[in-house]
Image (tube, rainbow, N blue to C red; front, top):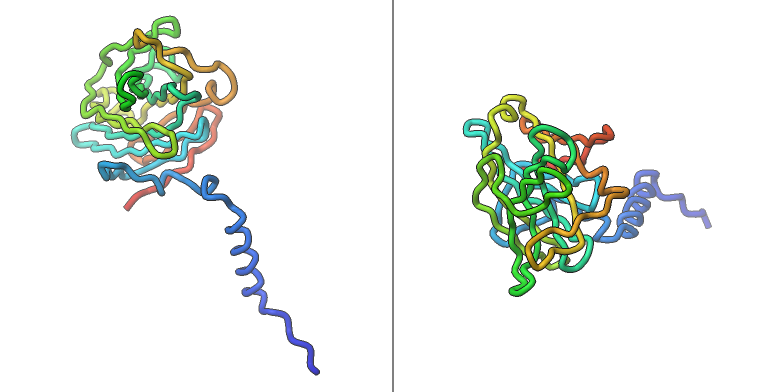
Length: 216
């Protein structure tokens, strides 16, 4: 009997790739491009941010310098908070103009507030230095939160076409609405970078690029 010939190389490669795909868990394969919103909001771009398992969806209208964003992350503890911010003058959280989302301790509904973080010792709700509207938040089935807003990008930042973005996760919110500070180690110190409004790309302060998904 003539021995059977081995499968073609292309078939063997396909089998190997298929096997590896089965080994990848759904959570590991999840990226911003697979995320949906209850109100079916659509954005031009999305980013898998490199720290704190966070995601940013955004569109920028250069004609009226409006930035529409959706930020998704999971608080560091149940009852905690998430934040996405623009820092008009620097690269860290101090001085940033922040959108903060958390669940109301009484109703359990997700909500978003603005925080002008003039320093780490002053973290209280306050109007931002630029216009922001259509602020909403939602709880997601996987335990994460999403915050939404439209932002009037300041003229100097719109002219440069770039903004300094910062994102964070925190453990809890006090009964007076004050945020319990986030950890000051590891990824919490790295979660910042530059967002190019024209290209839709982002880079971190360490020089790495976030994974960008262009949405058609």
